[in-house]
Image 1 (cartoon, rainbow, N blue to C red):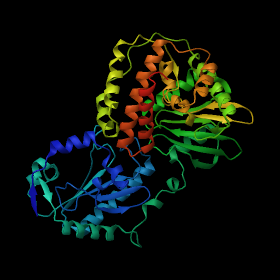
Image 2: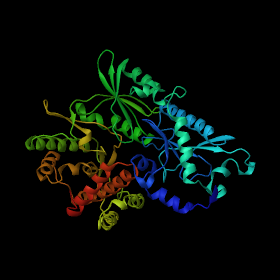
Image 3: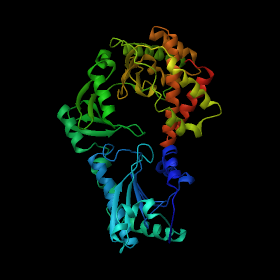
Length: 462
């Protein structure tokens, strides 16, 4: 086998601007095909397409996670590293090995999906060509493995990794994870707040993000326990619960307990059903949207307004455009840039408390009592009131009666400055959604962003 030069610059460009290669591989995209040698419900092991050492493997969670510490509990981390251990053992059985190297790399700017490199250093390698020198393309060069040799190695690895009497199935390693329970520390935190919990149900949203469980008390009662994906989300949600959310009364959960170290909260359960996907007669829909308008007004009046801080954020626009470009139609990019160019000239608008993810998914309706509830405050922060109309606008597209009902409930028309700000924020949200959805294998986000751009191009305001 020979070694060849590797075009690292082209590779880096693909990594920064292309979709998540692991998510696309798992989705069956032929452009991102790899030799998968092991897969279970939670993990995948596959051959590195650009190895510097024979048989080099990558081990990754199936679910898109980006923080090798913060996006895992102790239990799920242990499960991942059990797979890493098995992969290393299988590699030692398959190729000549003096030492196994294991490391986690990646970047928030590219190849962000957590993946663990597992590589076998062959016997007799001179010391100055070991360690990082054996792993880096610039020092070791790309190892060109013939197709038949790669197929042989993949077959042996599959056999070695196949579950059997000598291999513990890692899916069963964590009884907590298998039963949909949070880890021990989160359970202890929750039970210290509400008493013994007799039943846990994982109700997390399908997308990558925070984890949520329904906890049923041994003596009755129901709560929700949430572990945020990062400190910012935790801080925003806790701050909202401790400041303006209580002004909304029984229409929102109550914060029972919070733990900054665990990034966890316990909140009371709410009634009703999510409005996402719900079907109601037109008259009932107008009633609901009138109530949503009143709810939005209550949020925005829950604290005194502050002077506007400045123009909408444009710092990530180029990066998001790079990620979204393959999904844009002719004229989209010109429209996006034209709208973004107006941001600097927008007059400042007052900033008020905003939910930040005000959409039908987070609104719950009880048809019997006629009550509306709101959940999930991890994107909450002060901003223009129209921030809460960005995602909700999709719900009344093509239904002017629902828009009219919402505005009637809201109690006032938007100012010209607010309408212009809404257009800019909606465009930025659309292009970031397309970019994120493309990178993380989320077609719904991509389609929602494309739909928003089409709507905005035909009717720039609302």
